[in-house]
Length: 577
Image 1 (tube, rainbow, N blue to C red):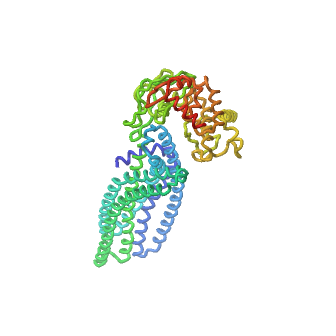
Image 2: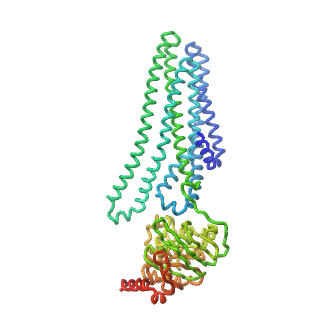
Image 3: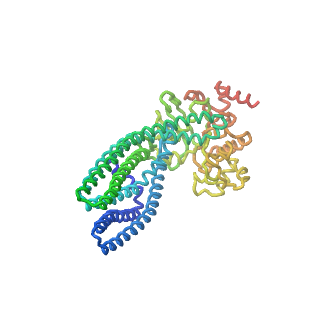
């Protein structure tokens, strides 16, 4: 219960903007609670009056019942509207906060978990939290309303009241045990569901590649395994739940038989008339409803606590680490870089950068060359502080990267990757992501420099064309050119090209090369390229091997002094011929 109360306090942060509606919601519930207590009592009095044949009092009481039920219908209708508003606004506030926190996660946290981990917490768990104040009010109101039934039975017959109260306590203890077992199993069930959800998400996102690889059957088998695993875990948990629930139902059935025997005895001893006995028997069904409501509340409390632990693990920086930045701010970044004895590995057994050192001067164009796995992209990831755990020192304009604030790093570096992610919005909106107030002229200028303008102008909706999830309606080259245009609009001092021309045809590549040439000496430009023809005009080329720089110099220097570089260049020429 303590955990539940603490979680309620935390969720209140997202619901407090709706405190006016919550006040009205609970006010209507109080009316319903009062009605729920009064109505059975009034009905019990009518029963007593019926035995005395007091017609006048029966009519008056009937009008009272009509008024109470009409008021209850109105307050119930009002609460359906109020609860919808409260749920909607709470969910919106919570999901927005979750979105902010997810974007703060370290890349390693994202790498180590499937998308299903985050999707299920964004959807199912956030929904569970957002509905808690509505759910809490409903269950409390229903429980109190049915207390009126107990009061009515107390008025009618004290012996029956004691018997029904005893049975209610027994069934409550059984339901409490069931709820306790459910708490143990629910986290494991949700974890298995995350694995299934994550795999389904990956399958949908990669559906085109699955078809092209003709691997539908393989994926279906993997999907079946994950579905089976998740379903078996849920079945195991529900089996325990059903067993205890079955025991509770047997107790209720036995108690009902016991009540019948008790009522027969009371009638035989002239302590109760048959009419009163029928009413008590009818009310006994409602007294068991009280324990059912309490049981439902215990279940919702379990779900709520589990969902809170999962949602707040994203927010609290415990299970998932968040990015950390320093406090130093650079107002005017020049673009000088230095790696000093940097060692890094994504996993301990696989060192990608091994005591690496080099310097980059502001407005210099430098290329990184080497075989796959040499550490080229890793250098870019560390420069952008995508992975903070490394040995050694990285500086921007002489300041340690770990001391700089987020804006000094991310607002001054743009990375154009080999597979840029294009969002499922219009071309214009994709460009507005980096600059909300970008003008149409700036957009057209950037697209011209990125050699994208002719393609866009040929589209029916031009810059308002929706490009689909991941930019599926665009070719690989068009996506990369859109990403380059996006970087040009951002106008950062440092631009990193990570195989950004790999998907372009020769003609478009020439245009991009001209765009890069136009930016030379104005920006610090770092380029990773397998096509050596794209970087031969760089001020310097660094040749990497096994996480170290084996040679550096101009294109001509490396052809003379680096056999590995010369071999790569000559093999590229042979492929062209």
